[in-house]
Image (cartoon, rainbow over the protein chains, first blue to last red):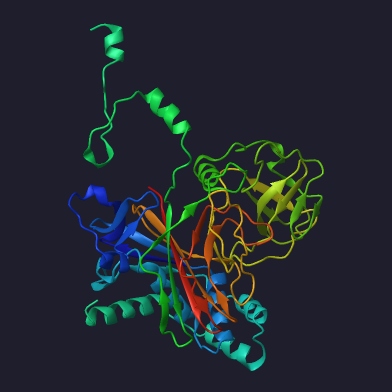
Length: 168
Length: 291
């Protein structure tokens, strides 16, 4: 599965020496805005304003592996839940919600989000569950949740809308 | 101006580190001085680790990003520089000859043999290239691919057979399958692994000492993300612990199969070695700088 955001800006890293006078604090380090290089120099996270696109690749084996791992310890999550979690963990390092473009198609404005998804692979989830000794009704319930219909574009867009309301 | 004078004209003088004064020297002198120095530490990736309990509450988080150690020993298909040069430049065996495609005479879960082939064997040979297998001339057999970890003149040894659609393990192709070795570039290094063995990473490392294979911590494919025109990409993975483990080190690999290894371009120590219990999740993110 490939999830693509059209963006008008994004985070990137630059050597601190490109920004004469920049002062790096421990708070910057804690909040992952600055990082030290092995040779003692520093890099800082900067925001670039330019049109681009951000791609995240989540393979079906990752989704099934994550769902099976969580199921083995009692969690209940759908394929959509897994996608949203893995996407959130990854995208936060590259783009903020404010970077995502809006596009107008047919008079309707919506977020520039595209999802290329081949759909669930039930046999793969079954093998991942078996590998973690999840069998019987527990496995069947996990499989049913995995196969629940989902609209990933809507889910991603709704998450964005919720975040904007919260001021993210 | 004389020819000698033109050749000796100073085009650039490198500034001193920190802006102070430094002794002038020639490029040849700098080259000889560099030859006497050990390899300097290089930064090509950073790591961040986060642990949550089974309810999702944060238990542990790295303070900022940790710098990596880049493996740069000249010991074959094991280090970052060879991996990058082959991935970007194609490698020494690009379009090497007729046996880059054909029909196998035997296959196993980790080999493909063509008894009539003459695969190149010099240097790192075909290590890192990908071999795709398809149905035989009668149309029997499935499609799969493998990452070549070593080879002889007639046998390609792979890490495992993969399903191209899902990335999961695939069944062994037909014994007389058709095959094609993709000799341009090589397989990437998207797999992430962790260790519970206490050691200090060295740039001569070719494997992750004490790599975990149990309690939910098997080597796993990372989620890839990149913004077009940005200077980094990330790989991230979340493991769910099914037993108690203390994480000491992490690495990236170019193959999923632990026994076959594959290239290990980056390695990093976890200085505070957090302990996970069953139900905890370990979320690991590596940011790799590409320029």
